[in-house]
Picture (cartoon, one colour):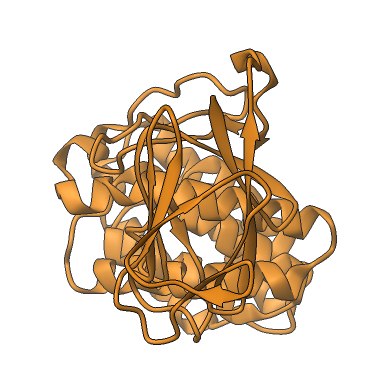
Length: 284
């Protein structure tokens, strides 16, 4: 028997093991909701059934409108309320893997979070690891899965024109990534790229320059050129936002210019494209 969690019109498949829900980015489903505790609830999934536990949250967990205590079994069709977020447990039988609903183009088999899954590309196949991922802290690498789930849901919201909903979902998780970078922690390249790309998409959708500034600051603290896909998103964003921090962008460009002698051809090309962002920003 397979189990899925329906949240915001998306079905997330639950693999056997533990599935945490809360505001913390380390949770498999991270919710940006002030009514949700950092680690709010835990779903325990086995071949035969699912139980849910309230992790001593401030506002509790409701199943079908009733607050639970201790471990409670849940079945298909049960409505689970965590903070202000409602989700429904679904049961399915005999569905082949090819029919699994995906979020953000990736197969969402959400089993034990400690078992880090490799990055997945837009076609649903395993993407090659990026070199800086291998030197990153294990705790930061473990955030990849949880962020991928949240990012996939947010991208669907953006595609449906729900920019405010996507911003609400992503704000807390993006802030944690940037704070980690400011604190000198090693952020996996895949996590930084996904966070930056989503932030640039938010800038385009909301018109808020602060989300474009996020991208510039994130790669400033990383002290490296942003990837091509992120730069593409920034070009789109700068045509939509009302203003950005041009001084921060210039400081970032100057920092990169000092490293030009060490850059290879690919990095030099990225640098030239980033220089073009300054020209576009000045015209705002």
